[in-house]
Every structure is written in structure tokens, then in C-alpha cells.
Amino acid sequence: MQPQSIPQSSGNLIADRRFEWARDLEAKGQLEGAADLLLQALELEPDYAVAWFALAQVREKMDDRAGAIAALQKASAADRQDRHGAKLHLMRLGAAPLAAMPESYVRTLFDAYAPKFDTALTERLSYRAPELLLRAVEASGVVLKFGSLLDLGCGTGLAGVAFRPYCDWLVGVDLSPAMLAQARGKGLYDRLVEADIAAFLSDEAAAKARYHLVVAADVFMYLPDLAPVLQGAARVLSPGGTIAFSVEMQNGRGVILRETLRYAHGEDHVRAALAAAGLKPVSLDFASTRTEKGEPVAGLIVVASN
Image (cartoon, rainbow, N blue to C red; front, side, top):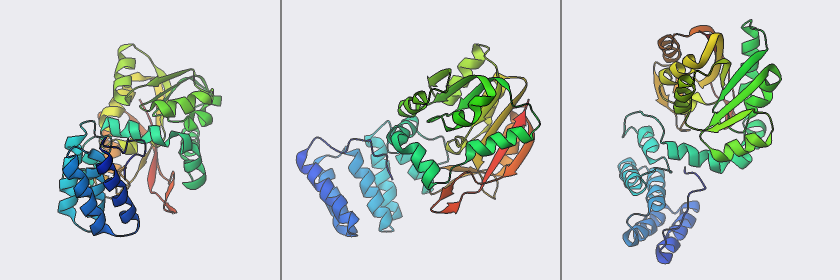
């Protein structure tokens, strides 16, 4: 429920011990005892964000939704960076309006995940977004030879592995320095940038940078509204350029936040966001890019042009 790289200590040895005992009781299914110990820890250290977050987790397991929401609000107040993603969980519980993920949460999550990212996706989650995107771009009829290619949210460089043979200049951007370190180790990219995607696209547009292909593999499920990022991508596409991306799909309209803390987009939202960016859909193919608990996650593979 929380990124593992966040420090667990409050700086108070007694509070820390109560926190650890609480987690042990929680693991044993003794939820009331765990909640009581966490409250004891929080009496000693009222700004102990990790303990507030743990208390929310325990209360949710106890079917105490109101109590979980109250604890998440305290966790959010105690950690203004919101590295735990308390605001995200408040959205999930319907206690806050749908909004962008906290940047610090995303960075913390993927910094912790980076060393095991490739193994987890390819061996345990049957991840195949780069392969599906490459096939979709090829099927769109464009020649698989691009002067410049931009990999949005490049992560450890799995999309770079798939697309590097087909471009002369490969640029990757990601929010997580640990993920970028993994990508750098693959030796695929001509340029790697640590930045928020929207800010990077704005800077590139201002610098009049242009790309023949923009790819976003398994990235847009961390964004609620696709219109701004697609508008940014459209501004850096060269004339006749192509963008290819994957999204997790939901059957209704608009956007929802799944229990997995990933956004799922309706086809209507994808089409409206493309139109708002002045992009013309070439293909929208229903496909699963990964599994979750052994089951395929419904998705869309999208190719569009300017």
C-alpha cells in the first residue's frame, strides 16, 4: 500500500517499537490490537506519517471506511510531499475528487521499484506494451525508420529496447532517477532527462525540438486527463509525425481510478483527448499489455498522427 523506500522511523524509539509490534499483529490478523498500538505510537508522535498511513490500512481491513479516511487525511497533513500517496487513496475511497497523482509519490514508488522492475514486469506480469506498440506502428503503414524518437516515461528502457533499431536519435524522459539509472545502463539512449513529462514537453516545444515518433508505453495509466499530455506531445511532433501509446481501459465513460491505483480511461476520453490535441486516430486496438493477479488487464493500443 506504500512505497517501501520511505523511512519507517519516527525518531522516537518507543513509538517505533509500537509501530513494529502493530505491523506484526496486523500480519497475524490481529487488527484491533494493531490499531490500538498504532494509536499509542501516534499519541507519542502525532506527525508520524507512516503510522497514520498504516492505521488507515488496518482500519480499511476492519471495514472502517470513515476511520481509514480520517487516518489518510492525517497522513497527508503529516507528509506534505505525500510520498505515501494518501491523497490517491482518498480518491480511491471516494473522499477526494479525481486529480493528478502526487509527483513525490510517483517518484518514490518507482525509485523503490527500479531494481526489480524489468523482472517483475516481464516474468510475473507478462508485460508486452513495447512489442504491441511496435506492431501497431508498423501496421499503421509508416516506414519503420525514424530520425528522432521520444520515449515518454521511459522507465528502465524497455520500450527503448524495442524501438532503438528503428531510430537514429532516441530520447527518454522519466520522473524517477533510479529508473533512469537502469535505462542508462542499457546504453540505448542518446539523451536521458529526469523531468515531469508535461514540463519536459513544454520545454522541448519552446526549444523547437521535433520528433518523428513519440511513444508512451504503460505511462498514461498514471495520468487522469490525457488531453494536456497529448497536446504537449502534438507540439513536439514533426509534420507527418506519429504518436503511439497504451492505456488501461474501462468500459464506461471518462476516467476511473482502479484499486491498483492506476487510472483506466474510457474510449470516449481517449478519442476526445486526441481531438483536443489535433491528433487524428490511425488505430485503436483492444489489447492487454499486462496481467494483474494472473488476469489480463483490458487496454487500448493507440496510434495517431498530426
